Amino acid sequence: MSSFAVGSGLSIASILLAVIVLAAMLIWVERRLLGFWQERLGPNRVGWFGILQVVADMIKIFTKEDWVPPFADRLSFVLAPAIIMVVVLMSFAVIPFTPEIGVIDSNIGVLFVLAMASLGAYSVMLGGLSSNNKYALLGSLRAAAQMVSYEVFMGISLLGVVVLAGSFNLRGIVESQADGWYIIPQCIGFLIFLIAGVAESHRLPFDIPEAEQEICAGYHTEYSGMKFGMFFVGEYLGLVLISSLITVLFFGGWLGPSFLPPIVWFALKAGFFIAFFILMRAALPRPRYDQLMSYGWLFLLPLSLLNLLLTGVVVLSTL
Amino acid sequence: MFSLIRDTLLSQAVTLWRVFRKLFVKADTVQYPDEQPYMFPRWRGRIILSRDPDGEERCVACNLCAVACPVDCIALQKAETEDGRWYPEFFRINFSRCIMCGFCEEACPTNAIQLTPDFEMAEYVRQDMVWEKEDLLIDGTGKYHDYNFYRVAGKRVAGKDKGEALNEAEPVDVRSLLP
Image (cartoon, rainbow over all chains, first blue to last red):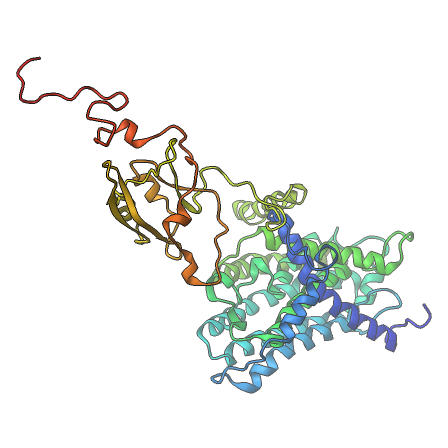
């Protein structure tokens, strides 16, 4: 394991490869799990239990015509899907997978992730706006409305953890959880972050910007081929990112009994949350976007402020 | 405040749990081409023309099915045999129009036209979707095994006069005053 070190080339390459392959595999995992939860079988024909469905999907998506509509704004239309991939992959730079695996050991890891998440919203808004299509415009309008409502309490819900750990460094946060995960003192912060994370990754209860049943495919209505594929994989990358963040912030990252190596503990915890997000997609209906906004501003924002206040009081009184 | 929490968090959690339990339930679907699904006997699928127990065509070309058909996919022409029985000279169903509503079966007075549980009717050429009488006619009686229209109806045909049908009363002489 000596060749694995934080910031080493092997570490960076294996993170990139693993994360992208995992995000692509999630397309199959999600379809299969959704199938089971809806009392069907799901894709099971291609390869062993349908595991090669991803390859078939990729062949399909690569051989499609890479079409830019003549009425679209070409530059931002091409740029938008790249932004989401780059931004989400950049966020993985600060995630500490194990003591050895990681890209950078940043002192402002939490802030970096939040900043990258905010940039990701540009991808959705630019994509919708440059498509010059009414459904896409509606989708990006909704994305903008959703972004201003969830990003506020998403940041504040994390601050409780930061106050407890006394550090913005994600690696430091994991290490400070050695004698107890933050899910216990920060369960309200965890619930708020979970809801905000769903909204952040545009997953189903809050996939208001795409809302297939209402506005076609929302912001990516005009996209096809690999550009659509990048939005698609970007969404799954976001899912992996949010699950990893929850693991790191509230569930002690790689920490766990020593009969399993740290990376396995990390993968188990993150995988649990990925499956939970898919279950949410299978089960929960989508609110209107004004409902999400009022829920965010009137309920979750005061709650997260209260949580932060109480955490501060407790930390100061035990100093 | 309490009701907000109950409506937003608790009901969602209950939904999540109920959907999660479906993981351990056998799938409702089957892998169709490999495994045939169970088709209910009353399934409204491919339309057939049945025969009576004697092996004669049941259809009497009354045109009620063509009238009942909401998409006008049935076309037929009446003809008559020498012994007085009516039959369709041609009977044509355009299955590219048919919506399998079953109105024709409901309208049929002789149980001739029936819908069956077969649904595998795809064709490569659109013209092949038009079925003629020889394609539609089957050898059996379909869903109704004993019914024979000419045996129970009052219609006079060769070998069966008025009043000779099953359960039919003797014809009344309307000019007679006797009880």
